[in-house]
Length: 299
Image (cartoon, rainbow, N blue to C red; front, side, top):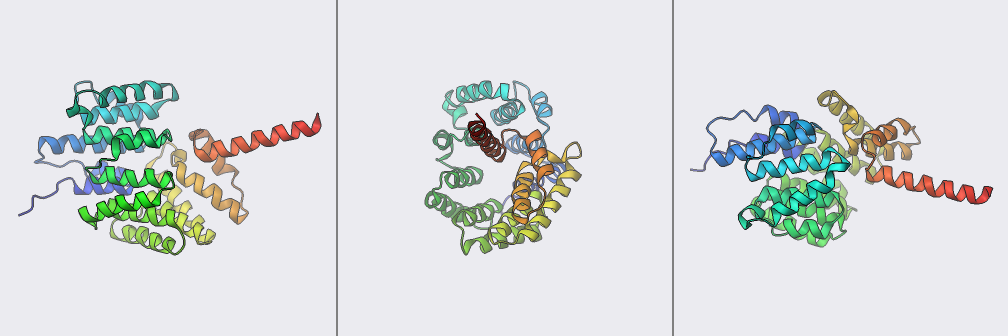
């Protein structure tokens, strides 16, 4: 008889981006010590996703197990540009320490997330490529898509399908790859996001997935409706600042531009809350190039 998975709801809600629901489902009894560490790691990662970085930093002390220390480093990395260098340095020290520590799956996952955010894909893969967990394989899919290597991403997806074809992360990775491949696969990605929404709950992550599919298919009106719904969900859960949802704002800017609608408000929110976002950087670079060209004509 299979052992019940006491953390399924917590884990699944986290994967789907239902962070508050995940936290609410974390009060589980009769957990083993390993399950307690996994639960606490997931809960603190939920708080990171909700922007409560200082809470995570203050809650995890120096005697905490390796997975929680790794999550604390992730919070430190995102807490301030001034902390990035020290967080990366500490992360590398941990990875090069005793193999029992360096091989920890959560530590390797955090390393992959940090170096993916740094756009250092080779460094990320150094720690994630061996896989071992569904999350590591799913992260590999994301990294290879970023590298425009859908062939390698597909290999990772095949491994995930062999491990558990119905797993939420397998379904999400399939949708991500379908979006990257494009063409007729876009509709298949949309159906995966829709199925997950109906089976569990509609989250900002799934609404964004459907919206991106709609934009690829030229359905910008539907995409805008989905993105506004995603922002409303963010406003409900992130009462302190709805602009904490950068991908929704970025997608809404692009959608509004295609529809000929004003996008200034969404872009200003994105620029204020996430100045390092790729869309903000691209627009800023274009504006600087335009200003230089204008100065050349006026001089």
